[in-house]
Structure formats: structure tokens, C-alpha cells
Image (cartoon, rainbow over all chains, first blue to last red; front, top):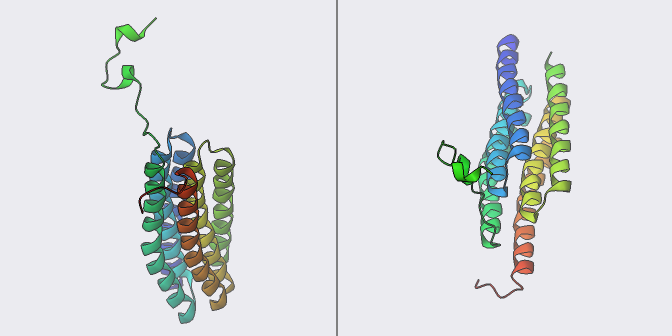
Amino acid sequence: MTLARELLALLFFASAVIFGIGGIIGLFRFPDPYSRLQAGSLCGTTAIFSIFIGALALSTSLAVAARVVVIMIFFLVSAPTGSHIVARFAWNSGLQPWKPPLSRRSGYTDRQDEP
Amino acid sequence: MRLLMLDAMQWFCIACALFCVLRMLLGPTSADRLVALTVLSSLVLGFLVLRGVRENRALYLDVALVYDIFGFLGFLAIARFLKDKFSDGDSPE
């Protein structure tokens, strides 16, 4: 029983590490706040939820497990709402979305872009 | 093994939170800083839950729940404050 719990927790913690590193890389490499918000909130939510499931598998007493379940339910409500608030703030403050340069837009290189 | 995994995930949360603080320090616009703040809040919540499960105390998880609620209200307040500041208070509400 303990071994099954630890294997489950190890699986979810590995998933959390993968998604967390992906979210941090996206937070640094993407060009504008909308795509950074997409990377950060999506990967952040997945990583934190995997951490919660792993911690739930590793919890020993019922009081701790019940509180983790309550926190999971509230996090499932509050995290997308917070991301929506941030995205609406960015849109209402007149921020323009990033567009790719013209030479990379449809897969062929435009000769007129070259000097 | 159990304590080792919980400790390692706590250090992982701390490392990701440091990168989020870096993004928040050098974000060009205020929307970037707000995005980094949402991710940072989620990471701190994960850290508090891991800490509470490791120490096996239910009181720490109550702290994590209250932190989540007040962090959510904090985004709402900061976004509203910045929006009012940018539009000089004449936005149609």
C-alpha cells in the first residue's frame, strides 16, 4: 500500500516537474504578455494540480487529506478566474497582440524582405 | 522516500518561484508583472500544501487555503487599481 502510494506520488511529481519547467521556459521565451499568460497559467495550473494530487497520495491523516481536497476545489475555481482577470486587464489597457514577421508568416521566404 | 519526495518538490517550487520573481523584476509591461504574479501565487500555494503534508499538520493547510483566497482577491484589487490608473477613472463601468 505504501509502495503504491509512493509510486503514484512519484508519477504525479514527475509530471509536475515537466509541466513546471515548460511553464517557466514559456514565461521567459514567449514574445508578448498574452502568450506568456497562456504558458504560465496553463502549465502552472497543471503543475500545481499534479503537486496537489501527489501530496494527497502522500498524506497520512484524514484531516490533512480533506483539507487538500478543499484546496484543490478552490484552486480549480480561482486559478482560471485569476488568469481571465489578468487577460481582460491586458486587453482593456490597449495592449496589441504579437504578430509574426512577414517573412515567417506562411512558410516561404519573401524575396522582398531580403536586402 | 516520502519525506525525500516532499522535500525535493518544495525545492522545485522555490526554484520556479525565483524564476517568476526574475520575470516580475524585468517584465517590460505591467501585464507581464501581473502574469508572473499569478504564477508565483500558484507556486507559493503548492509550496504551502507540500509543507503542510510533510509536517502532517492540518493548521498549515488552513493557512494555504486562506492564502489562496486572499491572493485571488489581491489580483482583483491590483487589476482594478491598474485599470483605473491607466484610464484615468473615466472608463464606463
